[in-house]
Each structure stands twice: as C-alpha cells, then as structure tokens.
Length: 411
Ligand SMILES: Cc1cc2nc3c(=O)[nH]c(=O)nc-3n(C[C@H](O)[C@H](O)[C@H](O)COP(=O)(O)OP(=O)(O)OC[C@H]3O[C@@H](n4cnc5c(N)ncnc54)[C@H](O)[C@@H]3O)c2cc1C
Image (cartoon, rainbow, N blue to C red):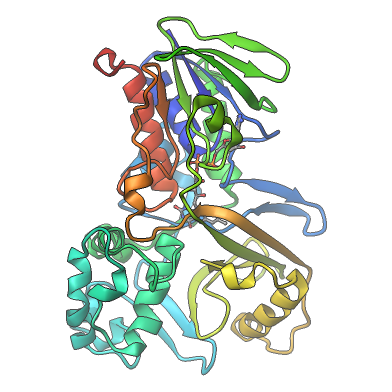
C-alpha cells in the first residue's frame, strides 16, 4: 500500500508523517520548488537572511502541532513569548499593559486599561456562542473592552473581524485561550524561521524514514471512476493509483484541480493577511507585542527583523507597500527606542488568500475528510476540524486524513 499526498503544506506533511509513523509508504507531490505553502520562508538578499511569509504563533495547547514537532525532533525550535502576560501597547498614547486570561477577571493589572471585571463577566456569553450567529451579538462589553481585547483576539485568531466572525468558532478559541495551557503559557513562534522549525526537519525526517518527496510536481488532472481516483496526472508523468493505495488531497480550497474531481469550494470567502518586515539592528531583544490604536496589530522582533502583522487586512490590500511601511514605521519606531530612526530596508508580504473567512454558517461548507471517492481523503486547515484555519487545524486534519487512509472500514 502507498499513500499519495498532493500538497506539501503542513497538512500534507502531517498526513505523510502520520502514515510513515504507522509503517506505510508515502509519496508527497508539491507544486512549488519548496515545501510549506502558506507557512514558508525564503531567502531575502537585501536583508541577508531568511524571511517568513508571516509571523506564525501557536499556543501550548495546540496538541497536534506539538506532536508533529516532537515526531520530527523540532520541539526546541519554538520560542515562548508572553508567558507572564502578553504585552500590549496603545500606539496613540504609548499606554502599556499585560494581558493575562483569566486573571484579568480579578486583577486590574491583568486586563487592558479602562476595562473592568464587569466587562469580562458580561463577555462570558462569548464562551457559549452558537453556530450561525455573529460573535458580536454574544458580546455585551464596553467599547474599550471590544477595542482593546475582543477585536484584537478575534481578528488575529480567526483572521476575521469581530463584526463578521462566527460566534461558535470564537467561543472555541476563547475557551482554548482561557485554559490551563492557553494564553497563560505564552505564544510560541519559530526560533529562527518557519523552514527551520516546521519544514526542513519534516522533510529530513520523512526522507530518513523512506518517504518520497517530489517538489515542482503540480497535479494537473486525475483519472477517476465513480468511486475511485485511479490515475494522478502530473506535467511530466502519470501515476497509477493501485487498488490498495489511497490519496490525500492537502490543497487549499482555491486549487483548480478540485474541478477535475467534480468539487467546488468557491463559496468559501477568503481573508488576507499583510506582514511588513523591517531590517533592524540584530542587537534588538526578541519580543512579541500586541499593538492597539493604529494599523499594526502585532510586532515580532527577532534576529534583526521587526515584523508587523495585520490580519483581516482587506482595507490595506490596495495601499502601496511603501505607504503602508511608512505609516507602520511611525507606529513602531518609538517602540524600538528611537522615534526619529530613519525607515530601514522594508519587505511587504500581502497574502490575499491567507485563510478562509470565518463568518456565521461557514462551517456547513467546510468539507469532511472523507469524500465520495472511497480512496480519497481531504486535509488542509480549512476542512471541517471545528477550529479556525491555523497550523493546528492543518496538522490535525493532516493526521486525521493519514489515519483515515489506513482504516479499511473507511474505504
Ligand atoms: C501570513 C499568514 C500568517 C499566518 N499566521 C498564522 C499564525 O500565526 N498561526 C497559525 O496557526 N496559523 C497561521 N496562518 C495559517 C497557516 O499558515 C495555515 O493554516 C497553514 O499553513 C495551512 O496549511 P495547509 O497545508 O492546510 O495549506 P497550504 O499551506 O496552502 O498548503 C497547500 C500546498 O498545496 C500545494 N499545491 C497547490 N496546488 C497543487 C497541485 N495542483 N499539486 C501539488 N501541490 C499543490 C501548494 O503549493 C501548497 O504548498 C497564517 C497564514 C498566513 C498566510
């Protein structure tokens, strides 16, 4: 038996790792010259270092991600920020605070200035948000609590603004953040780069254990019957899917190849993320800070790069990169110690299709891992894991799809 995996993002890699761990042969086909998909790094010559397409944070309770890293021997490639409270700055008046949840309920110093314990108590309905309802309808908090707490948490976790977000999904996220290994354990980001943490060790591990990885191998078409996919057609070659084999499609919802399978996910709306990288002196200490009151939402400083993230960035997609960078620089230069510091070299990454939009009712359109084809399973952050589109969702879906391939009862 062999499992053919189409797509080498973290979902495809997790599917491959899960199969190989169980002694099953895998071949992974990735269209790009490198692995990673929406979680990737690349060499930037002007910066003289590797850059990530965007800051990728995970929580300690992202169990699938941590299992993935443990298997490939990369648990030590995450750095933890904000274990003693997540630092925030209001870029308008430079007010600072640390967010601890749920300590903010009883300790003033653990919640944003201007918010009360009552604000958090009134927000408790968020914890029981129902599907198909907009999250803001479950929220009965002050404007300050919305601006300084719920909007930033919702936008960054769901990549969807609070006004549009699905209540049930936000409640899942908030419960996870409040839990023992939620926000109080800090946020975890790559020590150096996404490739160094999530991709290179996975590729090495797979190859060491007999997995085959083909880069620059886009799937163009499939040969199929009513019940099975029988052939995988690539530009240069064609692969016969044997009777005992299975195929995992770990592709994003907009991949053209879905149409060859008779599937169409165009109904899923997409949401962009912008990351702006500034080359700064490597002497700046590493830190991860939430920003309120401007364009910037998160500032991540590490290895001589200051990266600013803007999620749900629809409003900025048509602004030219230089203008965006100049505005953001005025917000972060004071935090880097010198408001007069001239604009350093900049690199702007606009990911138009960062994730799906987590609006009420969208869960009904997120597909299951099983398909109408008995030997085909789906993986990807956007399949119906019950989680927002994140690394955790992608890895969970990948592991589940890998497992499903091996369970005769599901085939
Ligand atoms: C800027 C940005 C910031 C983010 N920040 C965070 C964060 O802080 N925390 C977090 O948890 N998540 C974050 N995410 C989300 C996270 O990156 C995704 O959830 C995850 O990477 C999705 O992985 P995937 O494998 O499901 O899909 P993808 O990464 O899209 O992988 C699909 C792969 O399939 C390949 N492919 C497409 N067509 C074909 C074909 N025909 N044949 C072969 N291969 C094909 C693609 O090249 C790609 O490599 C962020 C995403 C972005 C874009």
